[in-house]
Image (tube, rainbow, N blue to C red; front, side, top):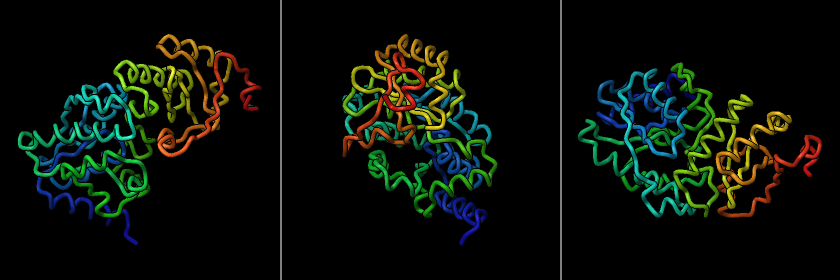
Amino acid sequence: MQSVTQIAEALIQRIREMQSVAVAFSGGVDSAVVAKAAELALSGNAVAVTAVSPSLAIAELKLAREVATQIGIRHIEVSTREFTRPEYRRNAGDRCFFCKDTLYELTSSRMAELGALVLINGSNTDDLGDHRPGMKAAENYSVRSPLIELGINKSTVRELARHWGLTVADKPASPCLASRIAYGVEVTEERVHRIDQAETLIRSLTGIQELRVRLEAGELARIEVPKSQIDLLLQPAIREQITRGLKSFGFRTVTIDLEGFRSGNLNSALTVDSGLAFVQLQSVSHSDALHGT
């Protein structure tokens, strides 16, 4: 079994063979590990490229900038225009394809300007078993995934991040804001901005970091937090502030998902009715919520 040091060296060597690279960089742990390896392998011949659009949370852009600085890699931001594409806005099950297609097309057209021969991303082997239409877009633009090429999974990615002292080593996954919108509900700039406001508010009131505010049909907000932290949302003062805040942002109904936080939850709607349990914040008591009424 290879040590983390050996895996790190293999990743650096794989990227070194590419001569010069542009890294699709969100600032999450996967792309951060690839960017760190690229910087160690190629130094000035590596650049991190972050797609900036309304679907990127403000806090995530700030973090991407901080992580790039920590790594020491050259970092540029490109404005993407996926919201101008009807295929993206209609929010069918292939929405992510059109987002990544927009990013990869834009970045590929600027490779000479970026001084890069190869475009790479942070996909790892765990991504192969999930609903990832964006991987088809990567294939269309010959984007390489060095983590997948070397058989590296998410757990090993985090080990590599700790090995290199990256601050995002234990950062929870944070997909784009559009991923919070139920399939079939149109993706708009106003809706993703509203979701960003809602999640920021809940974090500020509760300190809960791993959460999602899902937007369902009828402008319904469905809040997911770990089961162990649902009680915190139901404290009367916090419950009232969340309800009032989210309604002021434009949500009509505010609910808590009693099944708790599940990453990629909305993907279940592509194949099966998930039978979710909701509790409305504005009318439920603490006792009722705990008993699922």
